[in-house]
Image (cartoon, rainbow, N blue to C red; front, side):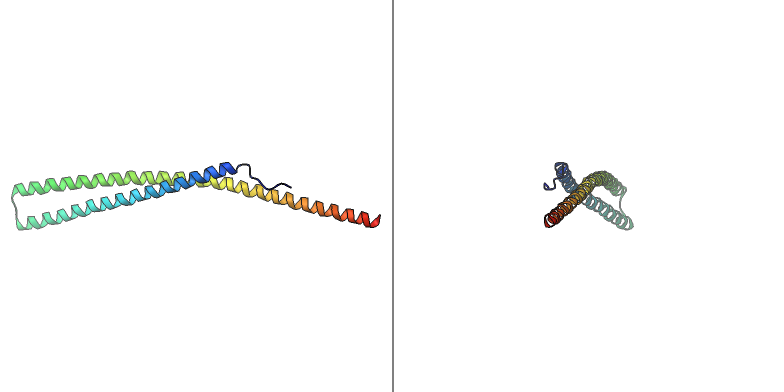
Length: 148
């Protein structure tokens, strides 16, 4: 009997390579999220630090011009924080989309692998039956030869 050959092996190989590529892209997307979380946290810390400095200056007393300058600086930092947060949310959506792609690719690959396992089982069963038939034929031939 000929050697087992899975007809969809090239498709399985293609799907596996595609899955590997998606896994790399998923890692890159996760890295972008982590980097953006760091930027957002830095913007948050700058705003908190600026607010603390503003509170100290207010306690010491300062002019209206200085108060306006601090408020303008605070608005800029708040805007920067909102911007970093928006970018983070965008990166998180991209990451989730990439996760879904990976899940779908894994499911497709697993389905083909399962089919391969089924076909291999069928092949092994056919091989076992062929071996049994051959042994039965040999035994029958030996009996016939011994009897005849």
